[in-house]
Length: 294
Length: 282
Image (cartoon, rainbow over all chains, first blue to last red; front, side):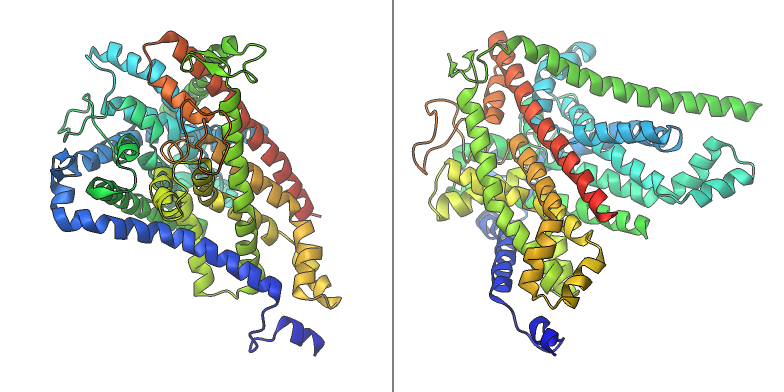
């Protein structure tokens, strides 16, 4: 009876003072998280009203005249697409080798190093990119300028490699060992087991890992900003020219547009676009990872 | 026979790629080390930077980074702790709880520059804190909220059910139970969350570069409306002067210090995380 009073049976709605404190903290969290989305939408309304659909389709970003986000959207898609193509075979090979061939003690060490490296700040990659990658790309491909979409994609691929590798490895490793035993008892070799039994089982998890990694790549600002050349134009099919991604544009112009005017609204519109693109990737990523863990 | 050959070739390939990955990452770390160490002289950490960052040390920049990340965690911890305890101890499983969990994931995946943009508007303009360390700390606090929440939640949920049952059997009220059982038992989880949050805040550049920082002119903030110099933005400015060898050298030094800080915090977090696992296996 006493316990019922304190804990509240399912019918009662009594909350202790401490409970109210926790509820307020939850409310603050809710306001911060929802506020982010709401502000992005509300603040982009003026530019969407003045530009209409042209905001996403326009090619010219001239402050004071017109705001067209197409160069940045294309740039973001190209750079992240490039990063996927470059990172996928490498990370997958690494994950397969780590999960299926390395002894457990060694595997844990690899995982540890990967998780540590996943936390390396973007600015460090930016510094490495500025010092080595831009010069390397310029010399290797005989270009006039090493700050290209390709350089940015390559740098992003290196950056998300630890994340994608360790998450795909998780997916491979979580495949029940029964499958491996059955496959081997049927006479399949270790590689056949890995490629034809374990890999298909782990596929949703791997897709999820890649999507999450790509979400991170798409939102990276600093590293990309330093090596992409920051030139607003629709790049076409040539990836060896300077370009611009949404985050790099935001990073370059936020300081001068701070807080007021249509320029600021246009940047918020870009932010909203980026948010939607990343949200789609993240949602499908978690969807796949959940499916794989079932 | 043929299959065995193929198997060997493929194995050699993926083994080789794995080795290349290791070599690449080793290259990254060793480069940073080799480039950074020559710059580190005895007073590097405790000297003021001079000549637009080309000479001297990084004392005030380090202080700025520490101020921003420290204040951010102080602001974030109560909100994270409160919201997690509310979700685990008070809310019944349902749509609202799922929604809150989803929100944590969305916040975690949001590109950090968006925190800078919206945070500046929300705090800098509407709360009128301007470009200052207060704005930066508030922005970072929101940014690391999911990191702290996830760690604390893991620790709380890892508590064996029998602890709660024992508390109930003793007739403890819910606040007493939280204060006496859940908080002490999930202490290590909280420390893990705090350390990972600090690491994340220390490595962040995009969210603070136009909302909280300055390159020169200010040492330590004298009021709430002063910006601070930070390690991250110091490196950013120096890295953009790629043609100037002195600037780049200083950037490597600062980069090494920053990376050392982030790695140290992450490693400490792991040590505490293993304690969490050990406790839950008792």
